[in-house]
Image (cartoon, rainbow, N blue to C red; front, side, top):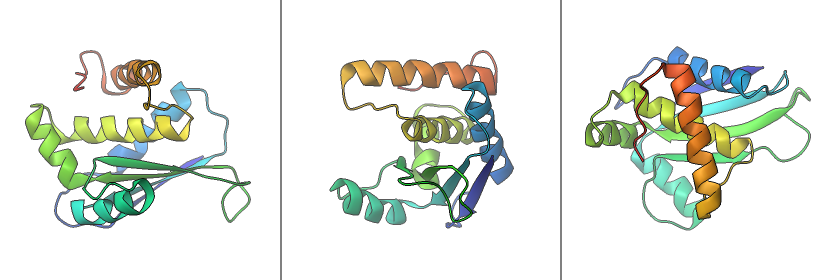
Length: 151
């Protein structure tokens, strides 16, 4: 199992090893079988806006997008869950808005994206409730007791 981090922006800095550890921890807690790969792209608002418009038909930036892998796996033939794209600009703004560290916001977005890759959906009230409950549980286990929920 590996988590690949690619930083495609230079506006906000964060330790990529922290993001990798969050995703790896969430996968372990969820008991996901090994090996599996996840990639995380760190982008700015302009980049994620293009993806959001192209794939969701929404012409505005968003905080996180998830793209589940379709097919048999990655180029090496190993199982791959998919890709998570996080706007660090949006994460920085939301961290300020909700008055918590950017590390917490990025962890929340990484876990949220990972849960989408694992099949969780938040399109319905029931689905959103289940997803946010699981997200809160994972964040508390990964970041420690008292990890605040923002939504």
